[in-house]
Length: 67
Image (cartoon, helix red, strand yellow):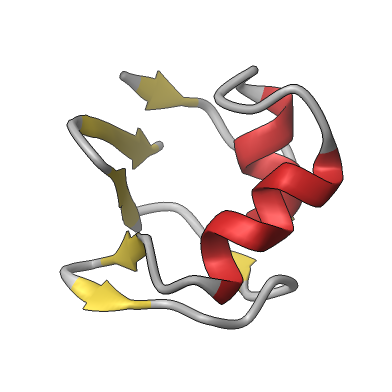
C-alpha cells in the first residue's frame, strides 16, 4: 500500500487512522503504544512521530510506503 504525502509530514497516528486501518484514533494510538508499529524496520512508540516521504510503516502484514 502506498500513501502520497501532500505536505512536509503526517503524524503516525493520523496516518494509521486516515488509511482506515483502525476505526478510531484511540485504536491507532494503542497500536503504537503496544509496540505493534514498525517505522523503517524499528518499533516506533511515538504517536506523533513525523512520517516523511521515504518512510515505510509496517503494522502486522500491512506495509505502507510513503511517497
